[in-house]
Image (cartoon, rainbow, N blue to C red):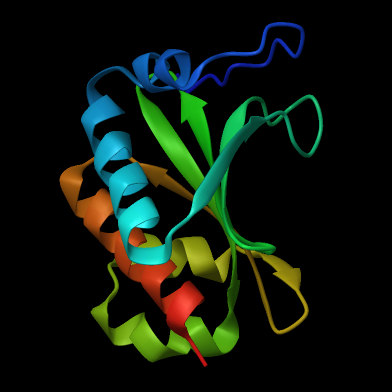
Length: 138
């Protein structure tokens, strides 16, 4: 259902990635705009992590990785590393969906990697909140 763009031989444009998301395209555009405005994020289209992940847009601030956004048919998924402390700082504000995602994170150091699939405006607003906590957490 949420297939990714897995053909490594064909490099998509940003417009190709956005269009692949269908009705969720506007949500990604808004998130892209917020990441660039709020964090001066730079972007690069890439095929990271191996053949099963597909094409993404990497967002970074200087040398710091913020997230990757993977295009999916009818959706997109934000992939990021989040510390336990950053998660705890906003846990009370998060949905059951976000808490479940964090509970099933791929553990790494003092936190873990999460995959947050965006399917609604509420999801988009929540992932922006999570990204703000990640970038701004001291």
